[in-house]
Image 1 (cartoon, rainbow, N blue to C red):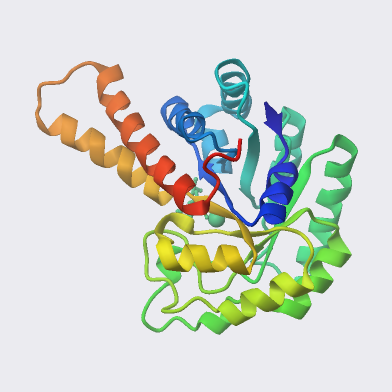
Image 2: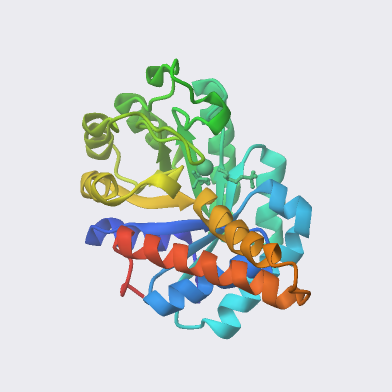
Length: 284
Ligand code: G3H
Ligand code: 13P
Ligand code: ZN
């Protein structure tokens, strides 16, 4: 059953666990994510970026996920989400296609520009019952993380976050507390105090991007402190490509479905482990 991310994350927040928002790029990664959700009886967010919409076709990808979820996984609550919509145009395109949930990512703009565009996105989304995620502070990408990174330049400010949520009316907020995109060096220690302050000053569920390499202790602790969703992309890609590479290395397999199927199985395993870690297992 298709739901909004607001429904899934509000429920997770209320019950002290987190949901995984997993990036898909094609049929195989979509099926891997949904198979994992079914196996784990877990609610799930299936999300995609503008690059994927351009690669596969927005309507094709959206309806692939929707049809697959509704037809083969009717008992699993599935949110279909636009990840990192960087412009008003892409967000409007996603809403027009039918996405029940979008992210407008104005995190690289000034505070006032971020507020202004996010507010407009929320106005448009409200009319259609679409939920909106936005980001304040910003979560760095692999290329930005080096020994010399100054994490303070990226962090979400708790007071500003409270104002941002109030001014924009968003449903969920992506935060920067030392997390980074990609398999990369995150901040040595997440800024737990900052997260606690944000969670105290903001009533909407909080999302942690760059969730691929958040394991055991750290993941559990940020869930306790108020994270209700982890975004996971790189871990799926690495599992998928690793399995396919191993199969191709034999030089004997020529069956496309077997080759891609091995990637799909490996991706499913990875997603299942994440669902267990985030505590969403058994919550569907
Ligand atoms: O946070 C973004 C994800 O890692 C997706 O990356 O733009 O290559 O689809 P992408
Ligand atoms: P990772 O690639 O680090 O898992 O980050 C995913 C993400 O934040 C997608 O928005
Ligand atoms: Zn992200």
